[in-house]
Image 1 (cartoon, rainbow, N blue to C red):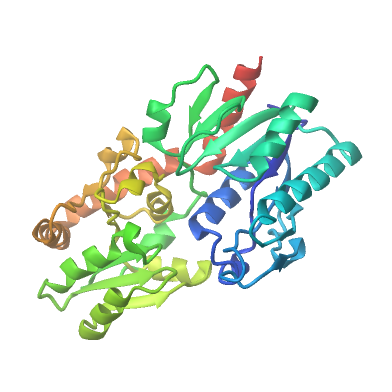
Image 2 (image 1 turned 90 degrees about the vertical axis):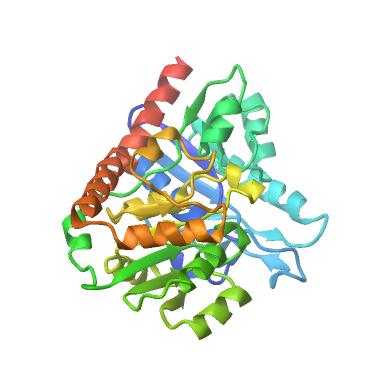
Length: 372
């Protein structure tokens, strides 16, 4: 690929400050999209964004009319989010009309893109198919936590399980994500002394597994361990545990600066997604990739969505029963300094291999060679 490669991105991207206002937009997906699109630009691609901010149907959602400028994209990028009518039977129709209008306007007023990218199953798929058939624009479908739509020219999978089982004549590529370049020395220098602090980032609902982990944590009689939690949502079981165990601290949904400040002080990160929850089999490892940016050991369940390479540095976290999870937590706290730094270095090594720039460079080479 060269600097003349034009990409039309048909998926939402909003400023971090708006995530609390648009609660149906996944913070993990938004962060993934930001890193991916920034890496495309750093690889000299010209990217134009058109997306729609997700919202529950009105009246459950708070907006009946969603305006494009209600959900601003980060200033680093060109484009905008589209508006639509958030009402049954009208939502998908008005989204498709808006996508067609604004993307066609962009194409004919500026320049025809070489690729149009879509993400998961959305209203934009119809538009991507239209451009592929009538304007010969190649369609790249990124598949996150679902199944691949039919008809794309290329498939990019974030989930190892979906990538492994997908059978198609069309070229496929595995890209679960990336991380920005980081200064590990600065991040790891602020550990809280004489404390074994575990940190969880993510949703507080059932699929994240935090309630199971917190329950197991609360059974351990050790005043030198703490569990820090950040994320969006209300979990009444977790609220009860916080009240009864002062070592469990829920900071709620915090901005990126606060998140980095907290993460710099903890000793371990945890990804306790229960494998018994079937949809987790199709999740990509967004949480683990985020943790990797801090260069510290990660306790994690091992799901089919993880590629085999993750097993080299993750500390296995059993979710089969509470006693096994308690044993995993105790073993982490008892880890020797030498073993701790071995796991830290393995995480750092893997993180450097997963930097966004190199990940996207590989994808662009794949698209280029497959298009020849």
